[in-house]
Amino acid sequence: MPVEYLKKADLHSKSDATDVSEIVQGILSDIENGGDEVDLAYAKKFDKYDGNIELSKAEIEAACDLVPQQLKDDIRFAQDNVRRFAEAQKQTIGDFELEIAPGFIAGQKSIPVSSAGCYVPGGRYSHVASAIMTVTTAKVAGCDHIVTCSPPRPDIGIAPAIIYAAHISGTDKILALGGVQGVAAMAFGLFGLPKANILVGPGNQFVAEAKRILFGRLGIDMIAGPTDSLILADLTADPKIVAADLVGQAEHGYNSPVWLVTNDRPLAEEVMRLVPDLIADLPEVNGTNAAAAWSDYAEVILCDNREEMAATSDDYAPEHLTVQAQDPQWWLERLSCYGSLFLGEETTVAFGDKASGTNHVLPTSGAASYTGGLSVHKFMKMVTWQKATREGSKAVAEATARISRLEGMEGHARTADIRLKKYFPDQKFDLSSNG
Image 1 (spheres, helix red, strand yellow):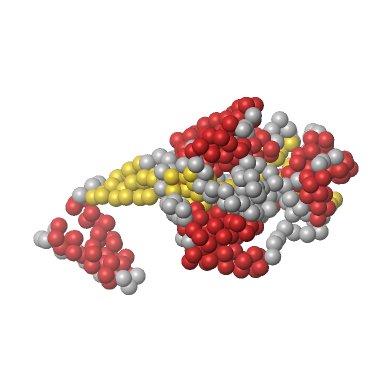
Image 2: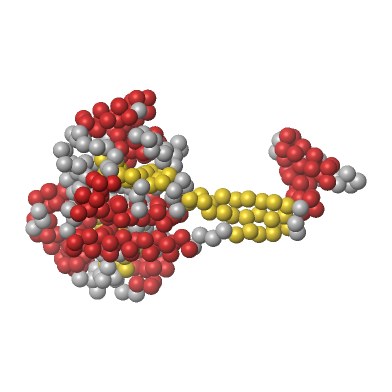
């Protein structure tokens, strides 16, 4: 029997990409051509902030002093978890060398990028966790220079908690810049900074579009859309917890999809009954976002069995995937398309978003079907090398010459020919493409 939609999305998350792209491209071009002065003009226009763009050591220390001790302890707890997880990730990357043939050795070497730019959303809310996730991971990877950029509040500046989080995580510079002008400053190396080799971190549609346009000139973590979350639940799940988790993710934004996939109709119906009251109980701004997301983008899908549930989840390839069902090991082994997986009701997406150690910069809009989230690997280049003795190069040179001629690349072939002639002057080789 096909899956049944007990609640179907009326809308599908998207933005007016054409208008946004034209606006962002114009701003980036202006800033690249005009440099610091133009960037500052955009900062004044959009950020409405006239303070120092690059925070001094004294300003950083003063901001850190404003952070309450309990919050400092919580930030350090989260940062320590992220750091230790990133360090464990780094241990999975190994340099190696392999003797391809006698006398011919090839190898792999991991090299961190030199300069990383970390964008941390600010403004109305202090996205402390984003500072921890991006800066800490870049630091563990071994980046030589890390810049943190965050939008200042008008006439106030960056939230002290963001400054503290970026500072203890290891950033080298902090810029009070938001939006496209912040991304441009890092990408183009304004204000005396090195040009970023990679830009990472979440942001609004203008930040995301700026990163998309710049991709290729430099690296980015991913092209991100609105955050999304899916819950897989069976009859053992607690409907109150399922409903709370859906609402908790829906508050991200009016166009943030949340999905419930289950094989238990009573559970689905109870969750749908509970959600509106939970949304109504949220603070006004949060509730407005969650209500719109639930009304227009949320879906509740009824399946026959857990295999059908897993297949449905993999089709959606959610950014966040929660399993509140029996036999978590089966789900861990079966599921293959998600940004981050949360097994059992004892954990939840918010834990990963804030403090548990796994990174919260994750693929959205189905991108989890082909990529994972931010990790030390994103800040590192896997390069290869080779060396050979003259005897070891012989068989490789012969094969290279013949394959090159088959492909019509005579110049390639002759780079092999010349070595064979020099190293083995008394030997004859048939190097035609016919063998």
